[in-house]
Image (cartoon, rainbow, N blue to C red; front, side, top):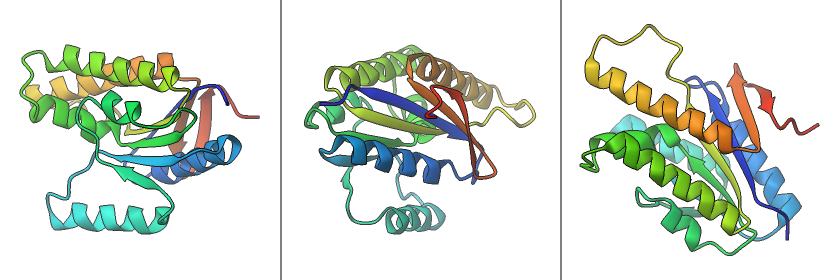
Length: 184
């Protein structure tokens, strides 16, 4: 069985990061075998999001096992056979659910602990896990205190994930830039 691998793919909105993350997941799956999972964190709350989810499903194809994990996505990873490959898309939406829907009194601390538990579970089960997230820190600083708090939380998750990942990729205009663990 191949050793566990964690990869973090980030980029701006519509940068092509999902396509890069899906290709990386396919490569890992081809090398490892086993099952291939798509861990969806989005909810179709409006027509635009429903259309985006449908487009992503079409582009991915039908050969993925889709799971809609609870906030503690380590639980979803714990159900996967060792050696499987999974794509978590996306950490940005997961973080917003942690902060705004879960009702945690200490959302940031609890969210960081849940992320760490998920990464630990992936390593323990020898999974290849690709996590995709939006880089939202490229714009002007927000004026709203709650938005600022969310961005700080998301960036803390990104730092934690980058530190724990074997590979870190930034996608700019559809081009993947390897910052850690270059595949060459």
